[in-house]
Image (cartoon, rainbow, N blue to C red; front, side, top):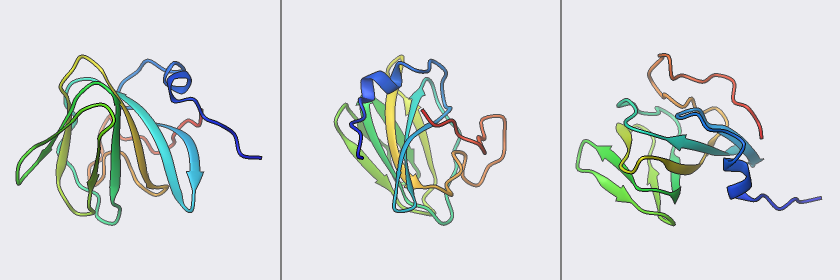
Length: 121
């Protein structure tokens, strides 16, 4: 039976940053939530496109060809292979992402922010 998912409630389940949680799956894609603060690292995904949807706050997606700023209710699709660096422009950004289940949050990088196992909430 399909279940309604309340995003505000799901965001209330965690308070850490840059640690995506899975809230659903469809057709090999995962729907993920994350809270962001400050800047991430420059990276790319060799084989996966990513969709970023800002729920709360303001996100600047740094791109080598120029930055894009997303406000609540706006999305940005970053094609595979495009180097990018998300930066929270407000104290906290609430972000929803759609991406293949194989997508590693740090893409081509392996560092302390890399999450190989994601919590499902």
